[in-house]
Image (tube, rainbow, N blue to C red; front, side, top):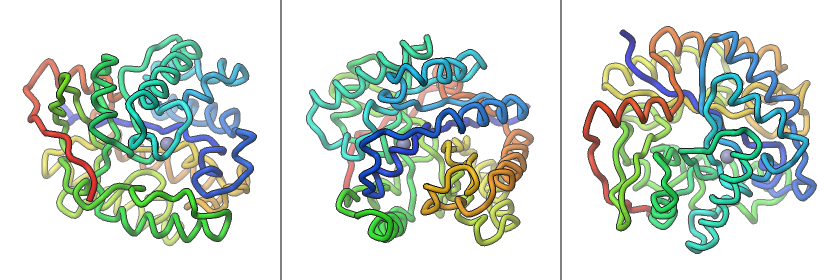
Length: 321
Ligand SMILES: [Zn+2]
């Protein structure tokens, strides 16, 4: 039997990228979901993979997206809550605002897809004790907002430099992509011990020991230099996870399935200068490797399995610095 792993996809839309790079066009909420989502769902069907899609409430509340989003559940995937407005500073807002964002997103996602989310992932991995307490209060089974990443500072500098070229960097937070303390958080699942209960954390995994990222967009960043190097790096990451008994949680974004010929307006993102066909061939290769090495499942299915088989270690929530 193969060891377990999870696959998730953050459904960040065109407007989310425009907003995070300081481009005013985001205010019209332009969307690429009608292009990206059918392609991703067909891709996952062909690969025989099921994933957790973290959906943004605002997109779910848009009537034009409802048929598209309901296909996620119809094809056997899970939907998770990715907040209502994808506000990068959500985790540092007041308890009332956080609760309102999560509840509004939950309602819109349930109405659009027919499935109520059981898990949450914060925009850009933003997390706080208050946010976790709100999730526990609302009865969520798990959070998936951590990504213990030693390149957080470099990723922030890259984002700031890009934003100052294509838009403006005023909205790039000092907490974007996490702190050094957060880079040392566990990679295996655990339980946050909270004042009002507990909630399971399933981290987006990075390389054991080195804590280097290997999510889809980072692999595309490496593939811009050499696709062979990116493939070798991914295989090494999976092998190291297996060796260290870390169940990989592999993260994708919708933009990982789009190329320069599909969404030229996103040419400031990694991989966006390559054609969509090349990127899809690359993803076929990467996900084929993943599926051959692990029993890949949704995060919800993985959490159910973990809960029924073992006691998870407990951790007090401490963030920042
Ligand atoms: Zn996101």
